[in-house]
Length: 61
Image 1 (cartoon, helix red, strand yellow):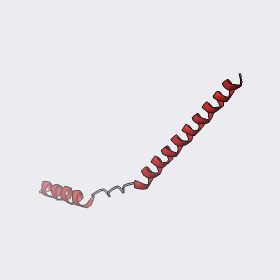
Image 2 (cartoon, one colour; image 1 turned 120 degrees about the vertical axis):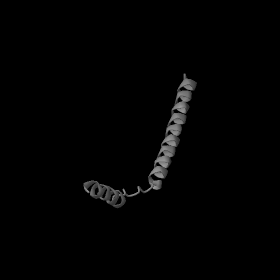
Image 3 (cartoon, helix red, strand yellow; image 1 turned 90 degrees about the vertical axis):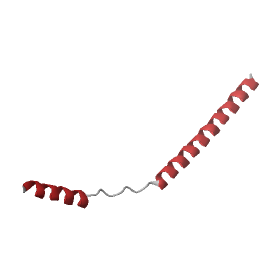
Image 4 (cartoon, rainbow, N blue to C red; image 1 turned 135 degrees about the vertical axis):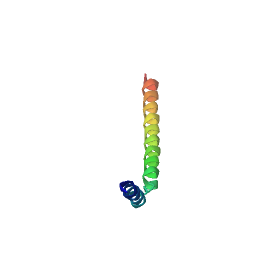
């Protein structure tokens, strides 16, 4: 008798408590990749500028 109630409670609890589905964060990943791309471009520009400066120093010597 108590097992029937226990099984019924387990079945009801299993049906009633389904976790909500997570939403995909597409915008966050896109903004992160855009940030990484822009930071890489900025780093390349800084490297190119420093190489030009070293060349100018070498040429003046």
